[in-house]
Amino acid sequence: MLTQGQGLFYSGMLVMFLLGMVVQWYYRPYFEFLMVVHTVEILFMGVIGWYRLGPAIWLPLLGLWLLGAVVICIMHQFAE
Image (cartoon, rainbow, N blue to C red; front, side):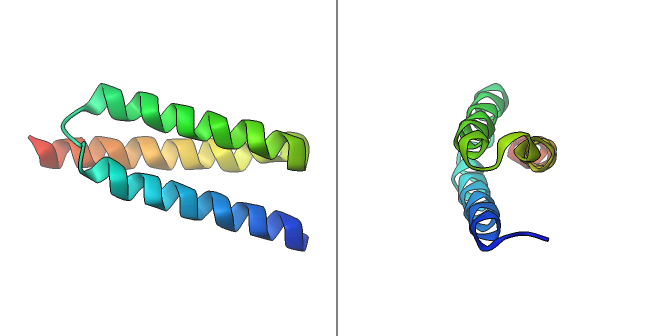
């Protein structure tokens, strides 16, 4: 079960991810740039989360990274 702090952190992480996807929609033709920005975004959340939750943060971040990579690939298809 998630504690209140963990739930708040995961909610904030999800909101940050979704806002990042909205911003990245405008730059969808630049596939390589978006992948680098998305990876840096996830790594930044990992560094912040490591101090709060420890190693329990890596599996949710891996899921977010994979989801984001798939969404970026789909957005890139719409750009062409």
